[in-house]
Length: 111
Length: 115
Image (cartoon, rainbow over the protein chains, first blue to last red):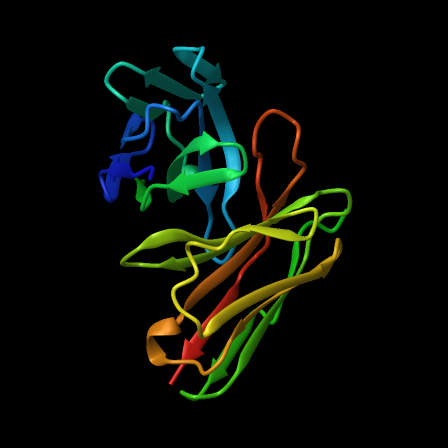
């Protein structure tokens, strides 16, 4: 089955700097790659997603890239702000109705 | 819409007791998922339903776990008997199947502690 690896598990960046989180997946059938943000005491919430027919997608300060050949995808957050502090999960979907999550990255934005 | 509603938010119980977690999905969503979150294993998919029918329960850890969805607006996850290693946050999520992608809306979770 699909396996999603996510790195790093913890990331601290200075406010205003950029943060990058990287994921790999194993199942070449996966064609949908969402990213979720989980704030303390809440459930994960979708922040951006990308499909396999697209290499890059951007939404304001957040961007995702996908390399299908290498089975890599990444989340980039620019000009980080305190409210970006959270746990971020990448995920891959090998078929309809099945989403496999990475183990998460705890992002700390330092003042 | 109030979103996905889970209850209880917190449950503390003793080993051997039965635990029932409840979920009300978003109205109109026809897929429902149960996930378990722990520090060691992250977010694990336990089971999901389409149109109230269980489709994939391969993530259910063992026979002590069971899930039901008697109608489109309610689902339960039951653990009987509970064990300390079941301590985790259990999330329910729902989605509208057929939108070309599974955009999951998660509830706030039920934090279970088994002593």
